[in-house]
Each structure stands twice: as C-alpha cells, then as structure tokens.
Image (cartoon, rainbow, N blue to C red; front, side, top):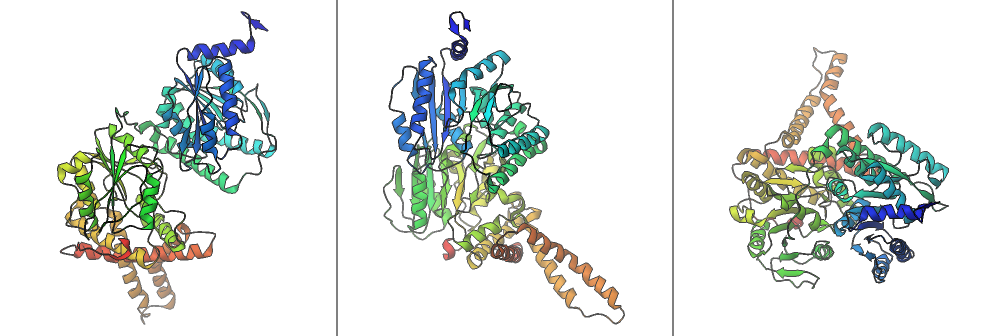
Length: 610
C-alpha cells in the first residue's frame, strides 16, 4: 500500500511532478456550448492539479460557442491558485476541434501538453497513469484507451459496435499500433505535438486519427493508459451525417498517408521572430452590406497586428471597429489600380488582398502569416468557399464551380480541405503577398482586367518566389447567381485565359483550359453529323450504329454530369446539371474568342459587382 511513506496514488502523482520538474504541464480543453458546466469543470481541474503540486496551465478554448461559454471561461480565470494558472482562449467563430486545439497549443507554453475534453467525460484524476506510462515506456505520446485491460468503461452497445468497426478499419488501413484513437484524453511531449499540428489538415471528426498518424509516421513512440469512462445515457443515436463526415475524413487521412505520402513531405515553416504588420487591402465600388460583413469578420481575427485599407470609388462612411481602418477614395478605376494605391499606402510587411464580397475565417490572418518565416515563400492563398447564407441560385453557382467536371484539379480554390501545395496562379479574393516583393515589380499590371491577378502571380514566380496554397486559410466568397451573372463573369475570365494562353503561357497554357472549347467543337460537329439524313447506300442497321458511335461521347458526358451533379433534391440536381452544361459551353466559346483575339479589352465593366 505504501512506497516510502506515500500511498501508491501519491507515488504516481510524484512521478508526474518529477517528470514536469521546473517546467509546466499545459492542459488544452476544447469547449463548445458548455456555459452551464465549464466554469465548474475548469475549477475542479485546477484544484486537482494544485492540490498535488502540479505546475500547470489550463488553456480552455471556446470554439465559437453561442451560449455564454466565453463569459463563463472569463470568470473561471479569476481565482488564483498556487501552482496553476488559467488562460482562456476565445475563438469568435466555430472552426472545429482541430482549429480549437491549434489555437490552444499556440497559447500554451508547457513542455508537456495534455488534450482533455472540456466536458470532463474522462476525469483528470487519471493524469498520473498517463505520466507513468510515458516514463516507464519512454513514450512521446500516451493516449487513453477504452480497450486497455485495466480500463473501466460504461459504453452503450451501439457505440461499442461503431467503435470496434472504426478501430478495425484504422488498424488495417492506417497501421497505428494502438487500440483506440478517439478517447478524449492524450498526453504529448510538446515538440512532438507541435510537429504534428503543423502538418494537419483535418479540423473535425478525424482530427485525432490524423494527429496520431502523422506523429507515428514521423517516429513518435505511442503508449496507452487505462481510463475510467461512464457515459451514462448522454449519448443518443449517431447522426448519419456525422458518420459520413468521419468516414470521408478518415479515408482522406489514409489517402494522404499511404498514397500521396503527403505527411512525410509536408513542410512546417520556421517560427517567425516577430509578429509582422499585415495590411488588408479591399478594393470596392462603394459601401455595401457585403463590405460591412467583411469588416465585421476582420474584427474577429485571432491575429491582431493588422490594418485595413478600403478603396471605394467615392468617400464612404464606415463603422469604427477594433482595428486601424483607413478609407482612400480612388474614383471609378479598376481593381488593379485600386489595389496598387492600397499597396502604396500600406505600412505592413505583408499585404492581404480580399474582395469586399468575401469575408474571412477568424484564423485567416493567423494561418497565413506563419508561412512568411520562410524567405522562399512570396505569397499565400487559400480557398474561397460558398457562404451557407447565399441565395439559392448563388449557392447553385458555387455548386457548379465545385463540380469536378468544371474545376477539375482547381477545385481546391472553391472547396475547403485538400492538401497544401505550391501553385503558380491564384485569385486576389484571398491572397497574401510580401510588400517588398510587390514593390520590386510595381504591384499589379493595369493593362488587363480581369486577369490581373494571373499576371501578378506570374511576376511572383518569375521573381523566384513560391506561392503556397493552404486549405486552412479560408474566406467565404459570395457567388454570382445562376445563370446570367454567373455566366457573364465566367465569360470574362475565359476570354482572358484564352488570350493569356498565347501571350503569357507560363501559368496559363494548360490542357485543362482547352477542354471546354474542344467540347463545344464536338457539340458542333455532333449536331451536324446527327442531322445528316440516312444515305441510300447505307442500311438502317449500319446507319443506327454510325449514329450511336458519334453519340457515345455525348452519352458519356451526360452520364458524368448526372453523376457529379447528383443531389437527393431534384431541383438542385437539375439546376446544377444545367449550370455545368451552360458553364462548359460559355467557357469554351469565350476561351476560343480570347485565343483568337489580337487584343484583350481591359475597360471597366460595372455589371455584377465585378
């Protein structure tokens, strides 16, 4: 019962104290809508560690709660403890578990980091067993396992089945040498967690799996500790959408790990030695509800060292917000001229371009700025996803852009997720560029519109700098509604892309850009051949075979559009299908026009808030 005058439990707490030594244990607690319980949970955890002499910092992270959780965490930080400090982190928007844990990690300082669910389904009293396993097995990570032989788990039968199936699939496809991934208590050595978080892409349900898969592939040793979990009756049936999302995210982890080998190659930029000032430049015609929405989202940024420069046609009265805001009237000029004026007025080391009809994620600046510690990187971009609040036809426009047959390998521009990559062309609705680089070649070219951002990216690459795409650097970009506004905007882009293919081929001459034009040519030839009457010298059977052969590509195309546009909602399915077809025809015709044009127009076009 006793070891050197201590009970076995006290001896295990002593192991934890000795391991921490003069350092600190950081406990990151992701929280969402726990206003009724989180204050008590934080206090219980703080008193526990304080009573055992554990030097700890508790970092509860409010992941955009809507029920007063932020206020509860602020109150939880007020009591003072001898060995424990409480450092709440408040995220203004819900970003998922991955984003919350990353925010907590960035705010923490401990040599050891524990991830602990804020609802305390697993009581932190079990901490000594985690340190014991880490010390005895020389582990870098210790996870709580419901399947450990000493675990005590009260678990609904349907959850046991789902958990067993998921564990079996993970063991087969990912190859982790553990029996559990989802239990909400894990202990890490800081450097191991930092290296893994820097390579992560999943934000939600498969976050734990990806985190452990990355750490294991990079050589981290993982051990397991027993846990006591009593779920009671708090868990109902699993939602089909939750199961679907977790399955897709898990398959994506397998694909990146085993097929792409992405995690082995993914780079983590060096840590910045200071927080550079970012100048956010917004070119717009006038004040609008969309501009107000954009500015409101900027007010919620987790990275605070920034200024905003708005460039309307005429003087506009904008609301005062919690950041430095400048308004520079420009007259009625094109976006390129406006942005160049913004670059000239900017005081920041980094210029962040965003359109006034887009609004950023709360971590937008934070996730982009970290790349600029690498001097080889000149620019950073991220996805512009369709806002859920857009009108029905605008969301259908976004759905068309997201269609595999429309955007192909460029879907990452319109869809969150995917992997980091180097690109050579990226739109200015979500683009960060070093100011020194912009100054070196004079900013945007002003002899083309649209397409000026394609030429800007060409200048960046020609200067020997990289452009990095990161799926976490997200903005929501309002779409043009189908069909008129969507097709007019698309037609302008297609014309300039066709023109650039012959004039500036380095980042425009791509086979994929020619495919819609080839499709239109096929439609034209197909219509002629189908209209040809049956020759007298050809039998009916042979004529039908001939008509079938020339129609096979059309039938295959229709099948693929039906497949990639599928929705359980018939209206969504039909409108998306028609939108894809109209997009292909419009792009194909306008691209050919640009390819054959002697000169590309660059006059200002005021329609569609373009």
